[in-house]
Amino acid sequence: MPEAFLKNRPVNSVNKVMKLAKYLLIPWFTLGLYTVLSVYNGATGIINYRELQTERDKILENLSQLQVINQELRGNVDALRFDPETIKVRARELGYGERGEQFVRIVGLPGGRARELRPGMIRTAVIHHPNTNQNWAVHRTISFCTGLLLLSLFLVVDLLIKPEQS
Image (cartoon, rainbow, N blue to C red; front, side, top):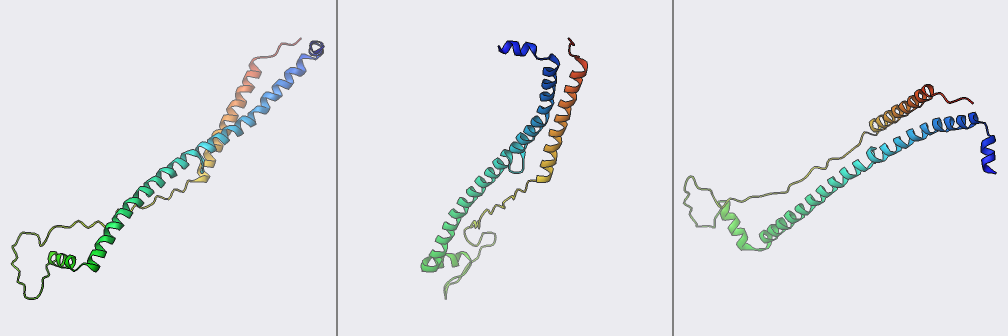
């Protein structure tokens, strides 16, 4: 029974429906391409998300380094605040002494042991503001040009290959 229906149906109507369906797929393909481009490379896309994750990891690493430095400096402050011997040692390094002491300075030698004071390696955060207008315009242009290319390809194929008329 279905074969009889298909045999009795005019061939031209099937060709027209197929041509129409083919041309209706072009906007959907263009929209799909735009969506894929936006998801992958858009303002909140996968590429920008990975860049932000990398920046977050760098900031967290810097934060842990600053916490270690903070602990060392807190220890130094506590030692200077509560330990008189530490204060004396630090004062001698800076060239101070107690009453009645006399100093002999030798020219060319450092005044005390060289201290490396590192207050911290503060990392400036790179605030990433993706240019949403530029991404949108580029994605729209690529999708539109691809849709036009597909439309022109279909038109050329339809004009070159003429259907058999029965």
